[in-house]
Length: 314
Image (cartoon, rainbow, N blue to C red; front, side):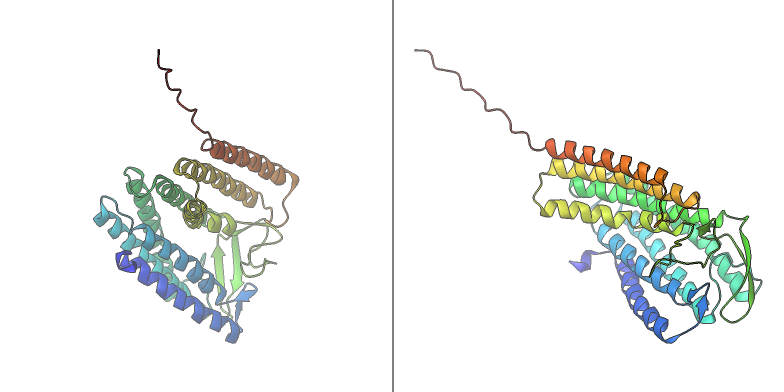
């Protein structure tokens, strides 16, 4: 079966998985830190995240559909940029330097920043194009088809939240990298607090202020959530109409969650310390999603009324 998967994205997924293992080892043996966490934490998290994303794209592109030459080409572009992105992040980690928001005039850093400025928007546009191509054709079962479409648009929105970090141009900090070199950082992922403060285990998401990495991560991996949901509903034996409607309800619910997390982060509120307004909005979203799920399930449980046979006339 794997022979039918999209090869470039599949190979990138394998390379990312191997790279994640290497970064995990480096986390244990290299004691250098940047803003309170290991220099290898960022390439490790990027490797794991993009390994999952790339493997999902590889499977998705194997689904029979028209225009496979176009979608395969877009997948190859995305795979190449993901490989380049994590490779450059690992290079900066090895040098003990900041990767993102770094305006240092050091030659290699300037090359890296200009490469990111061209490549990341190209990957973003390639994902949009892929979502658009798959929006106007039929492929797979209806539930899987809508899961793929909804997941791709959620991923695109999640990628867009990454630009909110860059747009914080008023956030300028002079920091020192792991080699003792000064660097001016413009932008950042934290809102209301400096980057590198107290964070959650593993993810490092801020526990004292807003963190735009939360909606960025949640949105990007909406693709995997939607596809796994569709496959899981099929495994439970639900009828196709119910599965498709549940996927639609889940997609809108996930979109609401993504919007809520973005709003929370922009208000400088930590994910783990939500305020009353955030909890009220989350509760309202949960009620709406539950009502939608109940409607979707009821839509497939109705039993057709038996057809009455005419009584023969004597």
